[in-house]
Structure formats: C-alpha cells, structure tokens
Amino acid sequence: MKRTPLVLILALLVLLTAWSTAQAQQKVGFVNPQRILNESRIGQAAQADLAKLGQEKDRLIRDSAKEINDLKKALAAGGMSQSEEQALTAKLQALYERHDRLVADSNDDMTYEEARLIHFIMKKADASLRAVAEKGGFSMVLTDPDIIGYIDDSADLTDEVIKALNATE
Image (cartoon, rainbow, N blue to C red; front, side):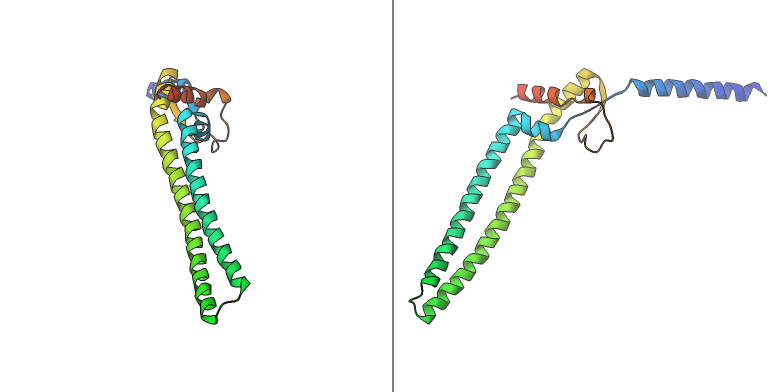
C-alpha cells in the first residue's frame, strides 16, 4: 500500500519533468508589424501610394478653402444689392458645410485606406513569417512586441521576415 503513493508521486514527477523539458525547448519569436510596413518594399510602395492619395485629398481641401476665401473676399468688398449679398452668404454657408464634409470624408478615406493596406501587407507577410518561423524552429511568433513585458532581442524575426517578404516580390 505504501508503494502506490510513491509510484504515483514518481510518475507525476517524471511527467512534470518531461512537460517542463518540452516547454523549455519551444522557441518563441516576435515580429514588429510597424517595421514590416516601414522597411519592406511592399510596405514602402503602399506608403507612397497612401501619400499620393493624401496629397490629392489635401489638394481638394485646399481648393475648397480657396473657393471659400474668394467668396468671403467678394462679400467683404461690398457694392452689391442686399439680395445678392444674401445669396452669396447662403452660398458661403453651403461651401462651409461642403468643406467640413470634405475634410471629414478625406480623413475617413485615409484611415480606411491605411487599414486596408496594413491588412494586405500583413496578410502577404504571413507566408514569409510562417516560412521563417518553421525554418527557425519557432513554435510561437508574436506580432505585437509592445504588449510583452520582456522578450530578448534574439527572438526578433522582423529582419528575416522583411528579407523573405522582399524576396517574394
């Protein structure tokens, strides 16, 4: 009877040792998505496209603001009838509303496009990430190193993923 608890304890110790050894052999790595976006060719191309879109949105906003300023100058110059002044004032109000809508829509468009591009790039990087992780024997790869309390820099796979991602283009 005394042997059964001893055998059970020894079996549990062997299982615990085997489990902790298996856990110790697992490798964990991480990638920094922001660096992938900033440093990979596909990320740089996407950022350039996004910048062009932003410049076009800014141009439209500047044109709208110029139209408002031109109308304000015309109103300030005076020399028009009351009905003309009222019509221009109403038009100015409509231009202000259109301008505000244009700014809000531009901001929404840019946010949407940025999120869409990030999703596309990270989806494309996923295949490279998997290949690098499998080649390096990593059992887990984290994609947000800022949330982790501590992780050794040797676990950073970002450079390898960027190289692999660039090689696929």
